[in-house]
Length: 514
Image 1: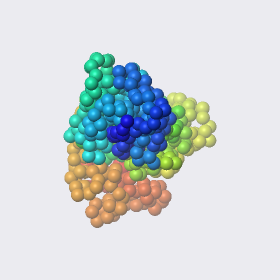
Image 2: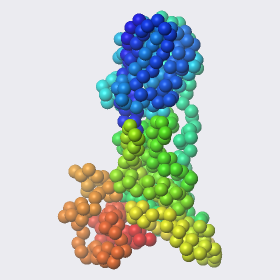
Image 3: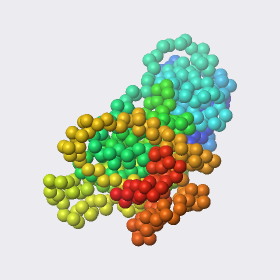
């Protein structure tokens, strides 16, 4: 009878904390007690571990086992502690080497037959272990490729508890088992993701103003609102915005990959390199949008869209509380989920794209069609998108249906492709990055208005005359004033100009006021 310990990782948002798993054998009466603030799924680990150990050929002792998860005040969620609990118990009983078990971080869920199931959040968990000074982790074979994405870490992938015990010195005969792989299809949390690889900007016919607005939005990282009747191409345009964005840099790639892993989506053998596109259904709740959960806190669509695009189609159909929940992330780039005993933080630096019909029937303002909605219904419909939220949208554009003449003309003229537009966007972002060198910002949309209006980038009065008049007349707010300046700088970068002129500022003001 003895005491043994090993380590596991508890995740709270993307932040991981090291948990010491202690197992102690005492007394003659049988029993197994798990303490240390476990949730319901973790409390059931005692039954899973005992059955898995028996079916793996290394049953646990019949004496009383006490397992402590320390620090005891830290909330612990999920089934990823199973492997650490099982090996700590076996080490306390002398079946495996206690020194070997104590030097490795163990993460994994046990099946009743002893096999190891992959768990979500493996990438941020291994990153946390590395940050806290550990260099060896043992994980399910189905998670091994994902864990190996973290540099400087020795990853031991095992398919079963029996294989893990043998690695730690147990005198058992190896028995081959079938590896439980991570599901190839996204689970329930992945239903909102949209694949954009085959969508080209050249597919869009007409709507030259909207295509230019997409490029401006991509160049500066600006939010976009498109208003227009059904069939005008709003969804098609929004789905092509991620293709205009450059590849993610290493830090953004690691952050986006960690969020994808935490959401329960497989990563395979490579990090995410392209900006994601999330498009939740209009029935989504606030928890589905920003994150939450009664047990373990999971990222919502806004967090999963980090470094990419969050597209809300039929935006007025979303609940007002759900839309307003995005106001704080749009300003801070961070989502904080508060619970009674913990606070989880998720990065949320996404581009918001909203699309809406002009009225409930969608025909208002369409030539040749009659709208059946009374004026009060039209006002109520668009009023579901609150003024404070719209005030945070840099570009507000009206999109029209194309005519037969535009269709014939478009067939005869070459159209801009996604690759060509992306090159323009990359050059514009490079210009902004060079201008903002030495500052914490790299995108125009992130630059504070006070800095744009200071001596660093201040424009002369003749250039800002129209914008000043709009502010004086109440046409825009002070926040809107700063956002027009940001869009003007993005237009100048896209056109290769050193600084915005009257034309760029006028175009930015038009895109702001629609």
